[in-house]
Length: 120
Image 1: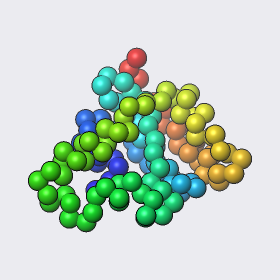
Image 2: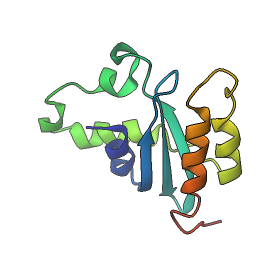
Image 3: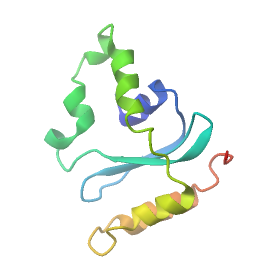
């Protein structure tokens, strides 16, 4: 069970996905969803009690009959804002003055800029 699986369950094609140990435990994914390719991100919290995924899903939930529906609904919440490459890079550096992972996140975004054909 993961954020990446939730995005896929919601109908997104996930081209790449990475977790970062930034202050709030960010993740970034390059996706294609509804004909748009770009970046989305979220926070998995700075502790297990703050993680939205762990708050929604418990061990063994994947064996329940409504799991795929719940997973898709959860993933869809992240797909309503898809960033362009430029916007994603800018967002990744918003807190570069104190977030020690910001530069690594931006490097990752740049390294994967062409990970999928861009659809406009």
